[in-house]
Length: 104
Image (cartoon, rainbow, N blue to C red):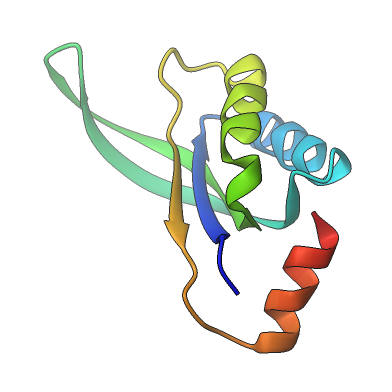
């Protein structure tokens, strides 16, 4: 089963994360999302080291939807450069992987 992706998106606010997660599922760009609260993020922005709380969205999709997901997130996200990254899923529960393919 090729082309299955795990994705990782961070958001500054829970309301924004919920909006993005629901939209991606509704548009069938992703099979599912998980929203994780209170992630401590430390990063450099404009030559300053910052620490903030963020909301993490993780989920599963297909390679064919990667660019569409990035486009949708950029429209809804409040950051200038939103974190939207993807990883290949190489193996797992075959029934679950088939469900991902069928769902998107």
